[in-house]
Length: 226
Ligand code: AMP
Figure (cartoon, protein in one colour):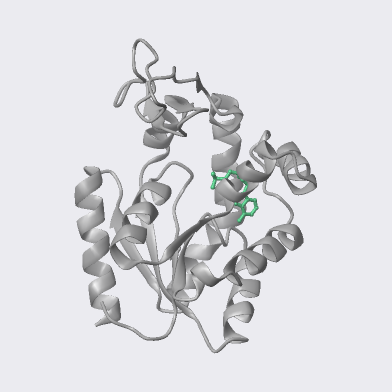
C-alpha cells in the first residue's frame, strides 16, 4: 500500500470486538500511529491529570466522555509529528458529532478518512471477552481467564521477573460492559450508516482467529488503497 498523503483509518465495532488488537497490528504493518482515545484517557488517569479525573467519572460507568473534551484531545494528539503520516483511530469517533468534527478537522488540512473497517462480533461474544479480561498494572499485558490466562505464579512476562499485578478494569465488570454495549448502540452504531453512506465502510468478521481477522483486514485495505 503506497500513498504520499496521510492515511486515516477508523476502526469501528462494539467494545471488545478486537479493534485495539487489530489497530496495533496495522500500526506495525503500515507504520501509522495507533491513536486510542481510551488509552489516552487511561494514561491521563494514571498520571492524575485534570483530564484524567474528569474522564474517570464517565469511564467507570461506561459512559462517553463529553464530545468537546474528546475532540480537543484528539486534535492535539493528531497535531504531533508521529501522526504526520496519518493514524489508525481506535475508539474515535464514537458519536456523530465526533465524526463530523473529525471530518472537518481533516478537511481543514486537505485530508480525509480513507477506510472504516467494521469488526463484527456478537454481543454474547463481547460479554465473554470483556468480563474475562484481566490486565497487568506493571507490563500492561492483557490476559483472559479462559483464552489466555494470566501467569499462575504471577510472573510478569515483561516485568523483569517482578510479579504481574493483575486486575480487572472497572469498565470490564459485567454491569458496566452491558452499559457500554447500550451506549454503543445508542451513540456509536449510527456511525455505521454514516460511513456506509460515505462509501468508506468495510465489514469484517471479528469472530475468527485473530490472524484471520488481520489478513481479512489487510485484504480490504489493499483493495481500498489500490
Ligand atoms: P475504550 O478503551 O476504547 O473502550 O474506552 C474506554 C472508555 O474511555 C470509554 O468507555 C469512554 O468512557 C472513554 N472513551 C474512549 N473513547 C472515547 C470517545 N471517542 N468519546 C468519548 N469517550 C471515549
